[in-house]
Length: 184
Ligand code: IMP
Ligand code: MG
Image (cartoon, rainbow, N blue to C red; front, top):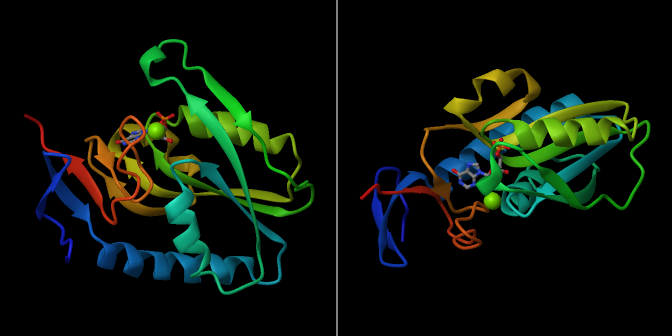
């Protein structure tokens, strides 16, 4: 099935609007990958994915970056039900030192930017030579965090989105498109 933007798809009995389909995602990642490739040629690139949300975006993106690179991952848990305290907990960290290397942090979505700020502070302590950020989605609500992001695949409307790595209560990460549940 071709998941075209605007199409309505039934997921788990609920209606989901396709925002970005596989074709749009692939085309955008090709451009982004080339841009990253150009900027990091001859450098010591380590691409660091934030689990779990970034796993699909990162796996597709790195295949569009045609230079040698290392991959690593870390995992944070943010407590969405506890917005006031904004606790972001590191569940596991990267496995290789990145001191003196060029780190590209890969996120699924930047919303308030709280998770990203926390991650950047953490990564800076590892003293990389450079530290940049690529995100699949940037939500309109994150305006204050715009300056923290170097590469954005898509601007995201102020809706809750799932698919292509993004979840709702742990589910729907495997959808081959990025979609938004219809408000009922
Ligand atoms: P922030 O800390 O407010 O920027 O939120 C970032 C995290 O919240 C992301 O890494 C996601 O895990 C989650 N998140 C924010 N918006 C959405 C959404 O629309 N769908 C799924 N997860 C989201
Ligand atoms: Mg999540």
